[in-house]
Amino acid sequence: MTPTAAPPAPAEAASATPTGLKPVLEVIPPHCYERSTARGLGLFARDLAIYGLAVWGLLSTNNPLLLVPLWLLAGAIVAGLFVLGHDAAHKALFDSDRLNSIVATVAFLPSLHAAELWRYGHNRVHHGHTLKQGIDFVWHPLTVEEYEALSGFEKARHRLEWGPFGAGAYYFREVWLNKMVRFSPPARWAKAMRRDQAIVTLFALGTLVALVATSGPIGIWTWTKVVVIPFLLFCQAIGWVVHVQHIAPDIRWWTRRDWNRFRGQVEGTTILWGPPGWDLLFHWIMVHIPHHVDMAIPCYRLPEAAKAIAEAFPDEVDQRPIRVGDYVASTRACKLYDWDAGHWVGYPTRRTA
Image (tube, rainbow, N blue to C red; front, side):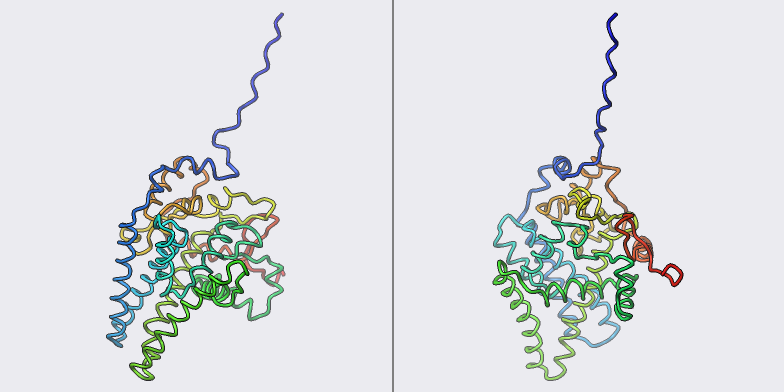
């Protein structure tokens, strides 16, 4: 009697979650990498023009009814220029490395960011180790034990920064102050980093000196309303942007042992679709998964790349409309982190402490 053949072993499901990015990169249409110098320069020129109009308006009035909308416009366009500079700093906006460098340096000036320091912290650290314990510094969570070891002031600051109104304070302190101002450059990149810091300092102090020289003491107020307040509003906008891109109850941070590139770059961020007109200023920065999968994709190609990735990995891709309620829910749920259990926890109460 001929023995019956054993049934074949079940094949691994085609949809099994990868650990690397190769399967994701393979589904991105090749033309998503095509760059248009004219389109990139057009976006940059348009943003500079809007920024110039906002500055002209702020210089022209002290009427509070006009200052408030002008500040909102200035803060938004400083964020828009920053997003284009971020794209250029990734060498994604143009084919020319030199043009990318020039545009990144200039676009970062209103947000007081040094391009080379940004490249180091953002491109190398944040993108290279997204949501990895002890390395990715952007919105890195504390454990209950680490929180309990803080001073009373530090606990109050944490509650502010991780609350619904603290994104700007967090970004100002943790990213701008600590990584743009206080950061000690590694020897390998020190010369370029100090050069870019000097350019930003010259921009900030040069505008102050020029305004005081032409207007006297009132120049300090003029500088505050034209440079400082738009910068602070930018911090609030970008702090919120980064929070909603990477912090949510169902987005997990990983220990170094368990982290892999798919978990960090696909499961560790989101695709958030804004209302009509949203990307005129924010340049598709919320379509974030394809940007983390490959930083070389120019910003205006991200929506098509996002749709291809979402179709190929529907169970792993988190895409949804931008909703204020989602952000508020995240700030309520995501306070501290339990690395052993792999989920967010709230602040300890007297009873749990």
